[in-house]
Length: 299
Picture: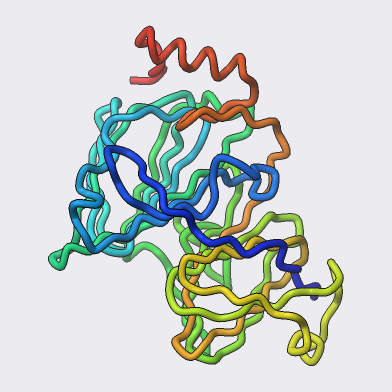
C-alpha cells in the first residue's frame, strides 16, 4: 500500500449565496485541476433561520451535476420541468443539470432552527454537457451504513466502499462519496484508488491525517506511525496527492468527515456562475439562450 501525501489543508471561507444564505465554502471557482472532476463544495450549516430562510430562488445550471446531502432541517426544491420535492435529514439529491435546468432550493430548519447540509458540484465531460437533465432522489434509509469492529462508521452515498455499494448510480465522474465517523483516539487506514483525485472534508470533531515524505512510498504499520501528520478540525478540507491509502487518527472527540474521490476528466473548463462548459464560445451561447428564453431544451 502507498500512503497518499497531504497536498494542502484548506480552511473554509465565509460566503453568501442565493438570496442571502450564509455558508462556508471549502473550495470553488479556482484550482479546478487539483479537484477535477469536482468544482465546488459548500457547507451550509446555521442555527439562525434569518441567515438561510431566503434560500436559493430560481437560478439556472448547465454542464454540471449538483449533489445535495442534508444532515439537519429540510430543503424544498422545484424546477422548470415541473419536478418538486423535499429533502430531510440524511437524504441525498443528485441532480444532473445537463443541457440546462432552472430550479430553486429553499432550506428550512428543524424544530430548533438548525439547518445543515452540503452541496458538491461535479463537472460533466464534454460528451455529456448537453445530456437530458435528471434527478436521483435518495431517502436516508436507502443509504447503506457499515460499522466496523473498532466503531468506525461509514454511510456510502455513491461508489463502492467496504463491500457496500451506494444507491446513486450512472454518474459521469464515477465518484466515491462516503460519510465517515471515526471514534475517539482511533486510527483508521482507508483505501482510495490511486487513479482518483481525493479530498476529505472534516465537519465534526478533529484529528490528524498522515503524510508521506515521498509520493507512492510503501509504508509498514510502523512507518505509518512515524509519518508526519497534518491537523484537521471542523471546517477543514484535506486535499490529497496520489496514492492508494489515507490514514486518519481521530482526536479525543472523534472525527467525522466526507471522503470524496473521482476520476479526473482532464478537459478544459469554462466557468461562469452556475454554468460550466468547455469553451468561452459555449458559455456565451448559454448566456444568449438564457436571455432569449431558449435555455431549457427538455420538457
